[in-house]
Amino acid sequence: MAAKCGQVLTSVLPALLLGLTAGRPFISLTGPSRRTTPGNPVPFNCTAGPFSSWDFNVTWMKGSDEHPASAQHLVTNNQGNYFVTSKVWVTLTLQDLLLEITCEVTHRALGEPLRKTMNLSQVLQVVPTLKITTKTSGTYIHVQQRVNLTCHASHFYPSHLRLTWMENRHQVHTVESPQVTRNPDGTYSLKHTWQAEATLDGSEFACWVVQDEQPPFRANITLRAQAPRLGKGRSTYSYSLQGPLQQSEPGKSIQLTYVSSGFPSRHITVTWFKKNHELPKTQTYVHPSGDTHNVTSRVLVPLQADDVLSFVQCHVSHKSTLVFQKAISLDQYLRGKGVLAAQVGPCRVGLWMSLPLFPPLKMAQPSLGGGMGAVK
Image (cartoon, rainbow, N blue to C red; front, side, top):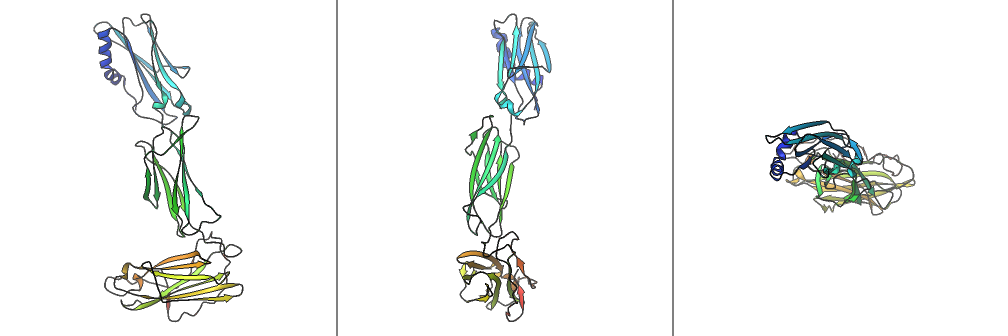
């Protein structure tokens, strides 16, 4: 924001009075009131005096090059002394971080010129370039694997900023003054690493950087776990996870069933949890089918009146590696006051299309007994 000439004279009035009292000329140099980005013109004002005559000269220098003045004003007081105010507009560039702006005033009564200098870095703001990179130990990101996310903020100025990590739009970590490194061009860069846990559903992580009171700059990345390669080729992974069509009263038990196919070996484990406790009444069958294996797992889940907010989790592992997990809400199966009946129907769901998994295997739908509805 440019300062008007009247404002400049008002701001240096104490110095003017001191100069009048002491009888010695002075010089002052002011710039814009806030920082601006490269490419924008900003004003600088130079005021000098008092002089006994008006035969003075004002020269502006940007670095080692002379810069033309935009305006010049002459002011006299009742003692017959002269004061000069000169103004220039300078269009800033990134290279100006290492340059100075200088105002020089000469007069025949001066033994040497009056000179005032300001670093252009005082009025420059360079916004960062942001990106997030990941580094993992293997080819695939597995479920619950800890992954290093690194936020790179490059070529910014000034050096102070605040960095915040967000996960699914929730703040998880803030660094008020992260460590920075200085670049040859006068700007700064930084790297900050945050460790995140990968899930099959995936999470969106963001790195936010704030300079002073400016709006934040940010970079986003989605971290998603991949199921391991269980066989040759690339395919979608299909499964069936089903529950009863009718709701039941508290005190009854319902049956949930997981069915899948195409595993390259019989080393398959299906575990069911309710409220983070493993359910005991589980039956899991692995059936050979050509060169692969199919799996069917059933569990009896006792319903309670407070299960409106409860979930059952199904975890499937192949050779001790978790390849599938899903949470099933129990409120859709619970009959009672305040419980909304959920509409259910047959469903087969595919995991992420990009997962390098085993090829699909045609399999006759197993007889599960009774009417079954797909789990939401």
